Length: 549
Image 1 (cartoon, helix red, strand yellow):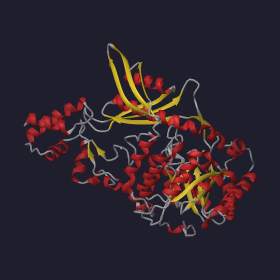
Image 2 (cartoon, rainbow, N blue to C red):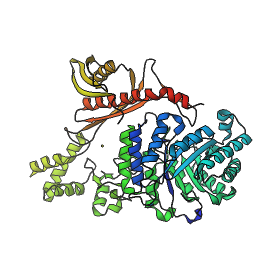
Image 3 (cartoon, rainbow, N blue to C red):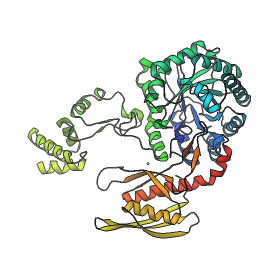
Image 4 (cartoon, one colour):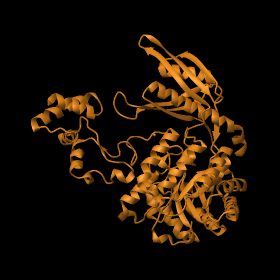
């Protein structure tokens, strides 16, 4: 990537996606190598400029995932607006061993980057790193100098910049520019700043750092106060030309800046931001669904851009306006983010205009009196159920006139339950060696009984941290999707170490499964999560050795 351009041109904002690194640090969002590869391919189709593929020093598995992404996805250019392959980046602490490991993982990509970081806030220097400011500057210079000896594209991040002394930041950043940094990333690591503060910080650093015009200025914001996107856009207005984001805004704690929100804000409000991106917005929905499915992290219905309700309109006054002109209540067309059309959700708040439109689309034509009667009946039905389906409309009108290694595979499951029966489940599993096992168990409910039986066969005890079931489609014959999160229990608890912060956390494992039967979907989700847990154990010993904190 060329970085010696005049950043005042404000032509293109570089999209740096860290879904596979910072996003994967979300509890339970562990991805296997194949899943990471699929997401990386989708990021390339989406038009992401730079993919931070992982933290290579963290574990042999993470190193291998980054290396394979660099090798298999790095060269891809087909359909990309920029006409260039995606840059593959690896994160490294400010230590030679980390930096060498990152370079070894990404070097096979035609365009690659080393991203190294070191905390600069006084609280981090005193309590985490236990070094003073002079030592911080020396360590940053040494890290960037070594990284630049390996790679021409080097990014430096002063961790916790949002709480760092701006004048000290100027010192550090001026020195790393002289050492060869080509991109300076300013992270609001704990989501502490406000848009006015953060935009002002970027402006101050660009105006006061020696050599500021020789680098690309980047930002990386967290969402602890719900301000990540606002802070990022404020930084863009103050000269930042790279934004670090994740799909669906996933990430540690409250998450990161959402790629889709930033990209669509820039695309929708060009008169405000006067910049563009290389993102193909029609690929956003597919990317969102893929990341949600692989991580097991469901997207909230009211999430901007990609939530299920983002282009849904139930209120009657909204629907009336939409039927006259979509721009009355939609500032973006759903097609621009990869959806085929808006959804008019018919419910008790809907007006007769929306009902009439749908009735006509279904092939019926009713006089006003009969239409009014039909609408009244439909609203009474809507009082009893959330939404009205086409089947509901037809009946009343007629009356009025989208995996982990398969260590274990679920073959069959059968349950017995009811208000006077003790819930019982029988399961039939097969392991990776082709051996088949059957067992039965009692539970507090059918799903609990299934989970008890599976646990007995596999021999792994776990605690269910999160469980949800959602209908993929509507109606009694709808396909259900179960999403769960588990953690090992009864003395088997395993801990991970965040290589960036050095903090331990209890590892959790997500799983998902789909079936027209909710019990079968739940069983498949549990097997999926257990397979992730068992697969991770193969790397536990190596992982702990790889991270020396």
